[in-house]
Image 1 (cartoon, rainbow, N blue to C red):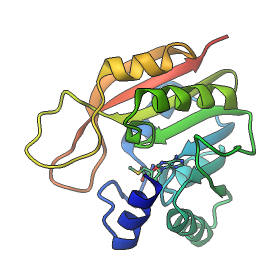
Image 2 (image 1 turned 90 degrees about the vertical axis):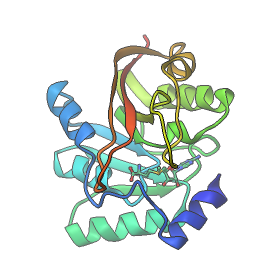
Image 3 (image 1 turned 120 degrees about the vertical axis):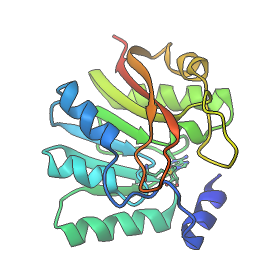
Length: 197
Ligand SMILES: C[S@@+](CC[C@H](N)C(=O)[O-])C[C@H]1O[C@@H](n2cnc3c(N)ncnc32)[C@H](O)[C@@H]1O
């Protein structure tokens, strides 16, 4: 998977790239009163969401397995004169420094794992990095979208629940749309979870 993402970034074939934060993140932080604190953006790409979080008072760390994405994220943060930390690492395999975090965010990283076992490991790792009652907001491609062309990986509600339930209480699971700069948006799941006690 690392190779696939590297090739996509090198080719500029990054259909998820917004050059701004996803409105789902902005709305959820506002509507659920998610207080500024230490946050990790998992699979942060070029850092759009990490930088928005830092600008809004969070102590923000972004991590991504793809070096070119991390370099672009660092350059964007420097250009914007925003202080955040970016780490190149494989979320499933490598140690993550800077925790515990009060909030985790991922847009399109959790859903990129095809195996149920990897998604469960992802959820377990996420929980291990959170402080007590910490929250994870995940934006996940929605399997209920009927497609005629390609799009983000698609997962069912059950895929999400099976992976996260042992480690998280689901606070919200709603069908919505990824933010996009294109004419039509792909359906997603907006899933807000609280780490189990
Ligand atoms: C669909 S892209 C989304 C990027 C970013 N979150 C955004 O919204 O612009 C998924 C990102 O997850 C990263 N990724 C995939 N597997 C990963 C892993 N095992 N550890 C860390 N990052 C990973 C990819 O390199 C890619 O940047």
